[in-house]
Length: 272
Ligand code: SF4
Image 1 (cartoon, protein in one colour):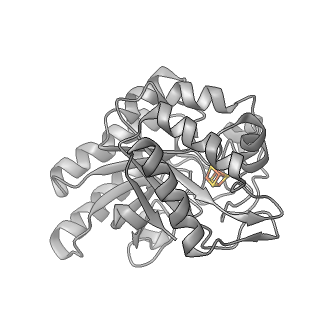
Image 2 (cartoon, helix red, strand yellow; image 1 turned 60 degrees about the vertical axis):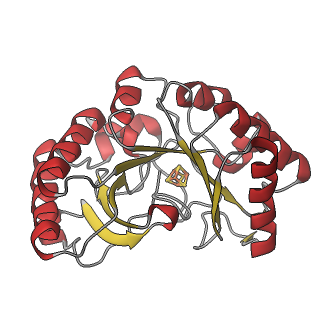
């Protein structure tokens, strides 16, 4: 999934010059509670590749069908990722700026990359050489967590960040529109296989909304069962895939966070 805010969007600047990194490295960018992160986009610079079609996605609608992924997505090769991360991490090491972490995210859902586990290990190795001690995060929509090799790779990094914006199947379909037979129960079952997790949730109103009283109650119930180490709550901050979505005022977002904390004692960090 996209890295936070409307969640996995690469936001490039000084390190992502295509001639040197093929669009694989982006940022560093401010990523809410994760602070200043360097992004690693392993999905290439072609069309967005995702197994969801979230109403609020700032990468636009998911037009690519899952059965076309292998033939149409220019997934970054292991060789190109190795070269890009080593160049970029070495540059950060020698010239700065200092970053707070590295995030694997980008142009859709990173676990769709057929070599996601291998690439995750490469990022960790390069981090150990050039940026020791900096945490690696992976942002995911959770749809592939029932695959053992994906869950195992997720368990290697420091932060596993899973998107949960809805607490019941009906709203999940409405908000996240999975392209496969994935449902919320499957995402939750996969998430429970992780050794720990941070949940990331985005709330909004308008043509589609996930802030009805029962929506929030159901979401809190799901979070209570998952027992994440933290919940990162976001408001809408960029144009969304579906027209007519609106940003919440800060009071509403903070009140969702305090309801969660009151009922579950789980820490909620808000980026309105
Ligand atoms: S559709 Fe949803 S899961 Fe996929 S990239 Fe966009 S926000 Fe992330």
